Amino acid sequence: MRRNPRRLAATAIAALALIAAVSARAIADGGGSSQGSSDSLRSLAAQVGLRVGTAVIPYDLDHPDYAQIAAGQFSVVTPGNEMKWQVVEPTRGTYDWSGGDRLVQFARAHGQLVRGHTLVWHNQLPDWLTQGVANGTISNAQLRNLLHKHITDEVTHFRGEIWQWDVANEFFTDSNPSGINPTDFWISHLGTGILADAFRWAHEADPHALLFYNDYNIAGEDGTNAKSDAVYAWVKQMLAQGVPINGIGDQGHLDTQYGFPTQMQQDLQRFADLGLKVAITEADVRTFVNDPTSQQPTDPLAASAQAHYYDDMLKACLAVRSCISFSVWGFGDADSWVPGTFAGEGYAGLYDVNLQPKPAYSDLQQDLELAAHGAPHRSGSGA
Ligand code: G3I
Image 1 (cartoon, rainbow, N blue to C red):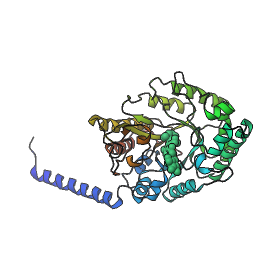
Image 2: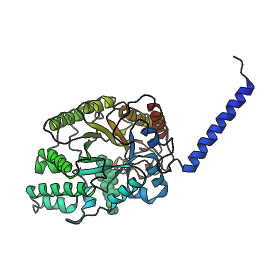
Image 3: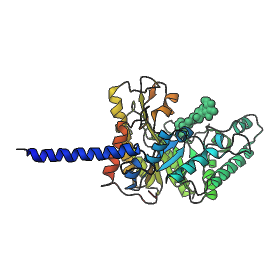
Image 4: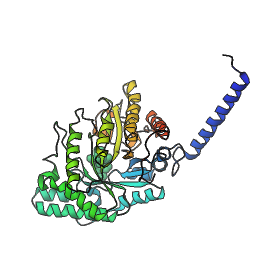
């Protein structure tokens, strides 16, 4: 085939002009302007009614480069710690809502929704509570009343500001078969019925918030699907009893040393088929790295595997109409929880330690661009 040199030159000039225009826009907004440029994750996701989110910690709000990405790329935010009981009531009877209020204000200013996280969990409880239970000065009956008051006061304080509440977090065992953990702090003191009560109390305090059960490895990540099966059986039973549960959140903490959970889409879909919303709530994908500071993958293939896992996780959500949000647990590797928890691992976020977008970021962009031409539109998210 003969090529027309003049047409080739014209095409090249047009392509250069397009690249220049795109670059100028990216430089002008730093890739993360408030409300999002047209190719931001949040704007692309809005085309199919999906909210893309991130966990936010005070560090992000204190640093303009982080705050700009948090505002520009994401349409829903989750406090990393600031709504947990340990933070909101460090001293018995004295509330400190400042961290949560600050994030709610940030979200309002940037047209974002908020995922509240989390009301009932065994971790990050105030010392006065755990010590009081341990030394017998807080009885089980008092503990139940304290939990009721905690849920009522917190949900009331944030009433009207929270789109989805993670009411209960991480109650199922990692065994096969799995079930509600009998040694969990709350279950061992108050019995399994406390979960239903927690949802009822939250619903009474804010009837409009979507109430979620949130856990890790409940979309096939355990390889056996045992944990997902257990949560499925439990939530079905709760719904049959009229407990006000609206959604299931799969945290989505993945690791490239294990295979991608190919069951994910089916697992999300079967929760959805019960009439529930579903969400990916804390996505990240870790791998082995050279050191916790620079976080370079030790296996060159791991960098592309990391991107593929994000890509497949988002696709699983996009394929399920009731999957209303896809949130990451922080976006920058420098402030990720992973190196501090999993020795030798890191590189889990969408942005590297220098806050540069990684291949995973571009893959999500492409998925969302393509989704606009075929994925089911989810309604009711306001996106
Ligand atoms: O605030 C104190 C600070 O005063 C103190 O000097 C410092 C010393 O260690 O600790 C600080 O508290 C830390 C807190 O994060 C705030 O940074 C705690 O030690 C640390 O344990 C805590 O970690 C949090 C972790 O939950 C606790 O399990 C992570 O930030 C938070 O990202 C993580 O989030 C969880 C989700 O809630 C549930 N799913 C898993 C996810 C990752 O673990």
